[in-house]
Image (cartoon, rainbow, N blue to C red):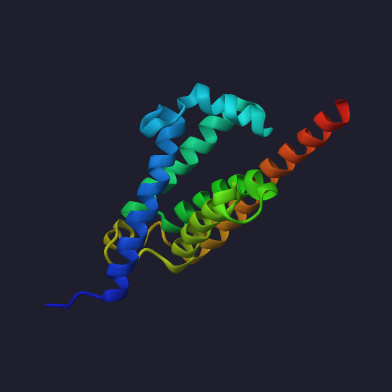
Length: 174
């Protein structure tokens, strides 16, 4: 009989907590749950924030948060889940950055914290109490860490860059 591992238990708590927050935020965007705007409301917000096309952006943001949150909570495909959540949060950081750091002033503190937490889980691994562990780490391989984080960084850079170009164009047209 093995004793409980405090670090594995801590990773379980961190994964489930972070995953649940991401699922809740994604559900707001996708389904309008928990006071969210659903796809239409989120699309209107995305358009106001400079993301185009707004409906596709709303679906991508909601799905990125909800799906990565479920995977993190389960500890399944943990590198991909952590990378996807970190990428989604980087776009939120870009939106909130002009307001400064602290969330009390509309800053990027909260999405940055979620992104760093998800990235840390993706890099560290899910721990023993996870589906990745139960499946022999089929979706938790070292090469997947590099691929997932590289792909997420490239995707986030493309989305944030496209938004910045659109904002500059709109400012020039005004």
